[in-house]
Image (tube, rainbow, N blue to C red; front, top):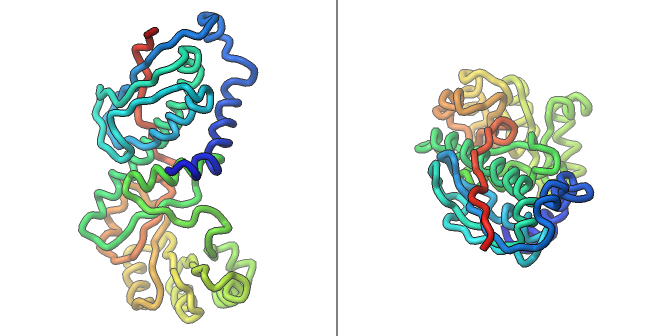
Length: 283
């Protein structure tokens, strides 16, 4: 994440998270720390995984006090081990205490997503298929969660509703048919936008191909029907499959030959990675 992206798209979200946690004051910290005292604390991994979100972790403390310094001994995308010292935070002890939970919430959540994504992408090695995330993200966490997917080796599907055309079942129902939905999308959307159509059976596959869809998403179809769909599409559109895809069942999809597999589980079901700030002391 570069500095411009952080300031424009993330700082206000991080500040809202801090305001959620500190509505008026950190009464506990203020009770035991009546004045500024310099200190340091260790950032320790308590579980094997892939680390993601170190820049966000650092930014939490910087927004509380720009004089806070963070020193990392690893970088986003690194494999980390249980017990590993990943860095240190230096600054006003009151800032270290008040920012701890929010900073760790981001780092644990993002690292958990990166770790889970990494474990799923490893199952696709040797195939042409790329793993995509979805919009099934935590409200106000999308930019962080989609970044974590990339760190874990996955790819981002569209970022939001303004990012591309995806005609799902209810859009098709509203339009009246796959053909009408694609026609209207081509008339309305800028020509630089690809048009993706979600289909649920082989008849819809044929209609999407004839209508000129750029991407055809095979939703909740059997492996047998997906193989037939690939034959029908025959390179006329890119292909994606979706529908309750998890680490446990993705293996059955690797031989089908789709271009993309999308999985909401990457962001909505990944467990956090256990990380702690320990050994706080004055310096």
